[in-house]
Image (tube, rainbow, N blue to C red):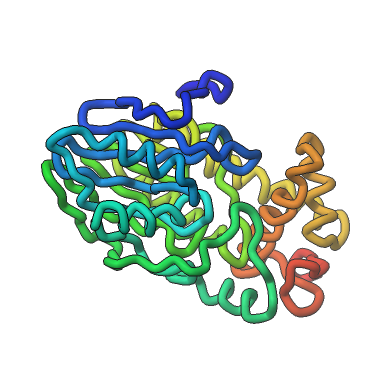
Length: 305
């Protein structure tokens, strides 16, 4: 796996990663997107574009310029509807006539507990939701999207977002924002659900992958090790939260300030969201509970206290 500092491709350049696969980096670097969103172009004749990216006329022009003589974009596939992945899908569809494939709109796949939190007024955080997104062709878990010389198996991987999917291409997998090499995925309720996230990780563990092509950052060349690390990382956060709650009840913000001691101030809100995701998961598992109604500002304690 490349170290993050070694990953610095030129935005707008269609770079071949392996035969039949190119990556184009979108011009949207940020603390949440790293160098930018990875747009993938799959195929040698009829092409699939995976995650067109944010609304950007320049990125749209680069994607269209990557279509070589004898090639045509036939499929546009969106892994999930965060603002750094899906908005350009509609413009690319208008320019090419290709339909947009995705699991569903931005609330598709949302768990019951997150639906209740959203109904009670909890708003999302992080990358932002493409609220108007809707696919032309909804796809289901286990469905195979077939094109000109390529097949992609849809794997529903909720957690980062309810409508998040991964795409299996033989022994490679496009993991979008679920598994990345440069950072752990943000899980921000009510859009993200840690219980679902961990289940999706365990599901991906069941297969022998050669490489993960992520939504941000370099290819993950040791997928099994990365999944092991990510699960262990989440378990260590859980242990830290339970340890802090054993000392005294606390809010998600208080726990984040205590646990994420090396996190830059600009990312502390995201850390708080991650802690709250853990607290919701621990509540569902009967290991912690809010003192009053479950909310992002609740004071939590160990169950039985």
